[in-house]
Every structure is written in C-alpha cells, then in structure tokens.
Image (tube, rainbow, N blue to C red; front, side, top):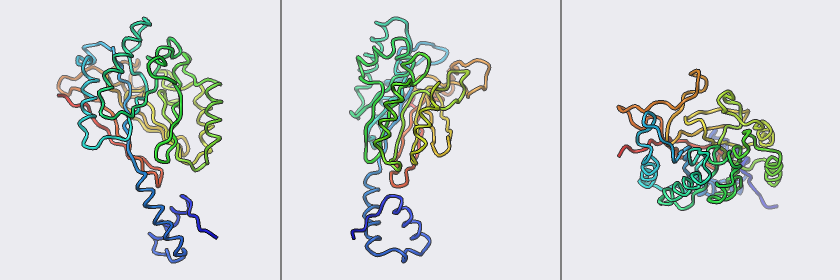
Length: 303
C-alpha cells in the first residue's frame, strides 16, 4: 500500500525527529516527510497589506502631507529589496464624499497612483468611505466585486465585504455565499480572511465591529487554520477568537487612538518632530508548513 503523509502527520513526524525518536517511523515515511518539507518550503511566500489610504482627505493639522503620502508609500514599496507575491488594500481607498462624481474622481486618482507599483498582482477591497453611501456601486465600476476568493500557494484567501451595507453588516446573501465557499474546503485548509471592519466587537461605540460578524466567525470556527487581516481602526491590534487570530493594519493617511482611550474618536494630530508617526503598511510572511504568519511593520519614508 502506498504511504501518504498528510500535513498533520508530517508535523507529528518532525516533532518526533526533534525528540530523537524518529526511528519509530518507517524509512519510506521519512523520505516522504522530507519531500513534504521541501514542498512546504517552496510554497512559503509573503504579501503586503496596505490599508486606509483615504485618498482625498485634507486636514493640515492631521496630515499636512496628505496630497503626497500615498505616492510616498508606493515609492517605499517599490524600493523594497524583495518584492511581494501580491499586495492587498483592505479598504478605505478614498475618503468619503457625498458627491458621487467626486467619489469616482477619487477612485480614479487612487487607481492611477497605485498603478505605479512594481507589483502588478494587486487586489482591492472597499471600506465604508468607498462604498457605504452607494452600496459599492462606484467602487465596483473601478475595482469589480466587493467580495471574492482566490488561492495562492496552498492558502485560500476570502475577501469579505462588511462595508457596502450601510448598517455595517455582511448580510444574509453574502453569509450564504461564505457558507458555500467554505463547504468546498477541507477543515485543515489554510484560510486567510481579508476584511475592512473587525469581525469581532472591538469597540462598537466607535463602529469598530461588524453587526453580524459573529455569524461569519461561527462559519469559520470549524476550520483549524484561519487568520483574519483587517483595517479600519488605523493602528496595529491583535485579537484571538478561540484559535482564530485577528490582526489589524495601520493607516496610510492618519492614525487613530486606541479603542476607548479618549471620549471621542478623532485622528491623532501630526507631530512635526516625528512625521508619519503611526502610519505604515505591513509585510506578511506565510509559513505554509505550520500555518503561521510573521508580521513586519514598515513606516512610510519621509523623503
């Protein structure tokens, strides 16, 4: 009978080898484990999460450099020694406006600026500033679907839209879509969820929650290897829902205070002595063999 080493079995084999008792495994199994390890290493990759660029924002007290911050961020990414496999923007590409034509102008300007990225595999998601006033109509004209899936080197990515509904919900139709998308996966599949708002109740008083986020998490909990990356709160934050890790990204326009740390949520003022403090993006190194992610925060260059 042909020996097949699953990912779980491979991890068990490597643990036994580390304990000095690998002799309990048949040699054929060790050969396959070694091949599996080589395959896993070949599948490691990294991508960038960029978020909350708020193109069109103006406010000298908050960011006097707002007109060029996005371009500087693009230049910073293009200057990385190793370019990522892909880049994902997790929402609030533009700053909100009641003028539908101005919304389209800002979306077009954002698209043109980020087209200068060396990396051409770039994915987008809306934030409430882009989509809540027209249920994502203008956004879709420029960037397509607001929720979707894709696969990269053994990891299944799911982009969830929790902003086009002005109530801050995912909605029944999309939850049904998510249920169907997950039903096709093995429960040991590596899954990354990309979204704008947090799926858990971080601080609902500041709209830092998703009304039906608990329903999405309930659908995800049966899967062993799930990680969520989101934006919206303009700062680094880490949270755990049982075995599901949630990581937020900094903004590329202005930082916000820690949840509940001040009576009213408002952008933190610009510090001339420390420009771009609190702004940046992150690299996410995927170690597909053990389903872990190494996060590195990058600041925007001043020059």
